[in-house]
Image 1 (cartoon, protein in one colour):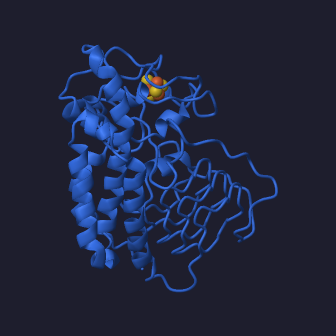
Image 2 (image 1 turned 90 degrees about the horizontal axis):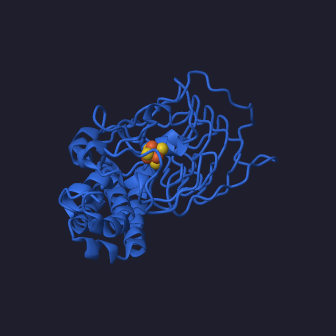
Image 3 (image 1 turned 135 degrees about the vertical axis):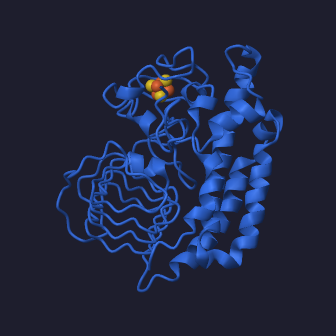
Length: 336
Ligand code: SF4
């Protein structure tokens, strides 16, 4: 099978789903909390501006986020929610010059991010030729979610997002089934599986469901993940060097950014090789098995605010795209 996704047809749609930090008021650097950890150097509560956020809403350490202890910021992706909230919901009025907008703006942002994440995945499902029988439903869901993103702040905050995510998630599951049904042979089901530290080097995971699986620090070097459903899979520190991800379904840039890989990792169309992936990332030798390793790293939390991994059951997290030049870069945050 080849990666037959109709990428060209969805790329214009996805243009609005890529972070444009030049038109955002630093929302991810203020609205979301983070905890001192391997991903963030300090604690920060929701609604308090990060100490590195400058007056012009750029990040003061953008060029050195990883070195300065903020790799989590290079992973987060708002899916274009930042500019939508800043420029559409609040009409270009920023929270610094209009402090009365701060609280509602910070409440709306995480809601909008989830809606944009759903839009991202729905556009992908619409581009899957095998999912054509569902295109009517997918299109209606896309239009419904898009319409909700254009509501006012009160309607956005009042949305039952978990219910909406569940409805869209079921539709995406059906699209995934149709797409993966074309993969020959046995398709493994690791949905929601705990594969932390798993030895999956060279594993045949073609067409597998890894939806919501915990793959933190798993060794997936050389694994065949073509046409695997990767929605919400947690790839933090997973080794994807030499793995084949072409045609994989519902993979996001932030999931890739959270993983390790190398020049030999094959990516699905429309996603970029993370800048921090060095050629020849080392990975431990392991058997071709879906069993977890004996020594397993602890599972770090990923619910709540910004995390370095993708949000479970839905889609990835993200990091702020660079402001100004390259502002529309997907995947990494780090305001300039
Ligand atoms: S990108 Fe990260 S370090 Fe920079 S201002 Fe935003 S939250 Fe702070």
